[in-house]
Image (cartoon, rainbow, N blue to C red; front, side, top):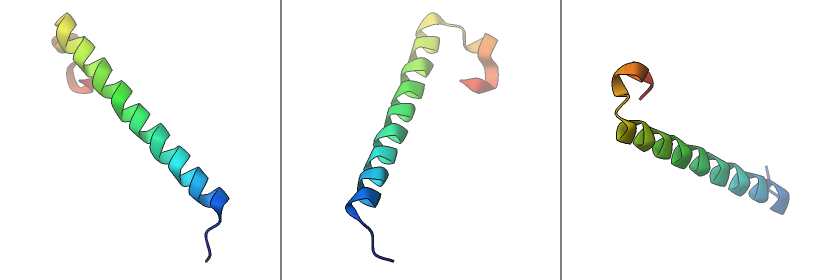
Length: 45
């Protein structure tokens, strides 16, 4: 199957979105650690 420019753009957009989600999770995790509420969140951290 031949990929088109549109397919490539979609893949790039997906990769960017995925990296943003990972980044947001890391920031949230750090914020939780800074707040010292690890015990409250338990397995979600």
